[in-house]
Image (cartoon, rainbow, N blue to C red; front, side, top):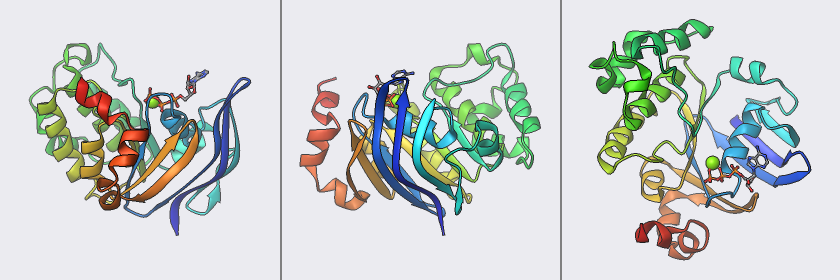
Length: 238
Ligand SMILES: Nc1ncnc2c1ncn2[C@@H]1O[C@H](COP(=O)(O)OP(=O)(O)OP(=O)(O)O)[C@@H](O)[C@H]1O
Ligand SMILES: [Mg+2]
């Protein structure tokens, strides 16, 4: 059975129609990447799954159950956890307290100590406050906060955004370990290399519609798609 099945999904912010008949299917333990340039609708897709977009239509099935009208809380309770683009850590709480709080809010959490095994960087920073962490450390903490809640489906919104290459490398290793742990992952990325490295399958969307889906291996051969839909040229110019 698929973990997540989107068909004919439409989403709106007020009168602005942003997703158009989007379709997507994710199987157990897959790592799927959602690619597309700025404004393509990647974040909106994740928000539509978690229920935070104001209006959505179409069918969203999570493990065979229709969640297209379900509340944000009930979707989260089912084990769907989003690590948003803007890293959400509590600035005045320490690393330990940030993880502990997420742990205490979950019905069936993983052990807090397990997070320090997965993220050795955070082990050295247990007593540091969120506000004093680097961008990369905050990103690790955001992922740890989601992971300690023992997600069934982990949604990562541009996990590498704004991170230095060496930190991206650390994150790649950590997420590689994470996906070994019985978690299904849907992540958005503009860092194509990172996405292709971690993912198995990819979807490309543009202007809120599906334009391509296939294996990461196939995508690697498709410079035309990368040029047309992923502003790879622009990235290289950076
Ligand atoms: N809160 C909002 N209210 C109105 N329009 C919005 C809102 N959030 C996003 N949009 C619009 O919806 C479209 C899709 O935005 P979205 O954030 O999903 O894109 P994205 O693919 O995540 O882009 P990025 O790579 O820049 O994060 C854009 O045209 C954007 O301007
Ligand atoms: Mg986005």
